[in-house]
Image (cartoon, rainbow, N blue to C red):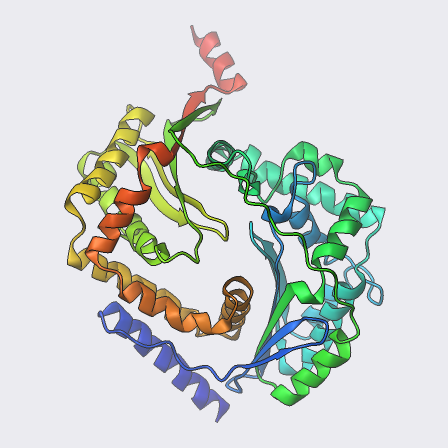
Length: 455
């Protein structure tokens, strides 16, 4: 019987996704979510699904790199790592050992706006997961050994993802240049000198401020009984004391009143350019139109940017766009890597040409419908696993104030018109709100020496 239900659920999900791809408009499936808020402020969402004997737990702490300050950048990401190194009742490495012994997995990630932890285990191990999560929320092991061990790990991650990555270092410089006051100006990885400067007292103060039940949302999806889940949550999390409300992030970013430009000189083979335009919060009414514009520009080989720069003019080896909106606003970004024999300046002007064509002539109905199909299919796919639904519920509750916002996602995009897409292109993708970073390739020391020796 279980196997039949699983196959039926998979077939239904496939049918919905296929329907979306054909332009049909499936509604978000109704979810019988139970919501409870503990006296200490922890919000808990429960969604029973007995299709398979597994459970997914997803916890969102409403803290990310936007909550940092100069001098402690990267601390949110550092905490993500420290959270797996023991607590009052569980020694280092025990967390992962117990999860894996239950046939499960765990992981975490840090974003500019949140830090999130998730586990998926067999349903019989749910109590163990709750006990582990509650103990590290209540009494994480915060000592010098934990700090120094994870400091070394996150510094190495920064080197790999930013310092030794051409695209990573270009992205960092773009945000450093576009924002002059808001914490979005630094990467989640933080600045290397700040990582070196973080003290144990900084870490303890950060934990006490942000890792509190009243600053977290937990979603549990899968094979359990809701009444029993709430009993276990109250048992393990109920005694944890709430903390004072975290200080708000002060919105001190001044308006951008003109184009900003930076050059990045570093060893590289090909020229490249990245452009960022200021856009509002993902809660803003223009978010759907910006998402659809992003899809029209760079989703697939029939997209505007691919056709113009790679297929028609053949000046770029890679090109893409991204609507990187965040809680307090963000950037709509464009990127192009030039082919050998071509320049960043050529690619930059070609990018502007594509944008200007949309601003002047708009987009076609078929392009917009294709973009909407992609939104529908992506949204539906997030409902096909326990982990996907748990993440979706917890994030919507934490960032939009209610998990029920999931019901608005597809309709908001469906309501967007070609005129809306043209309007946001005209309103936001303008020179005075633009920041540009161009890559100037330098030869590495080895390459320069070899070239000199060959003369």
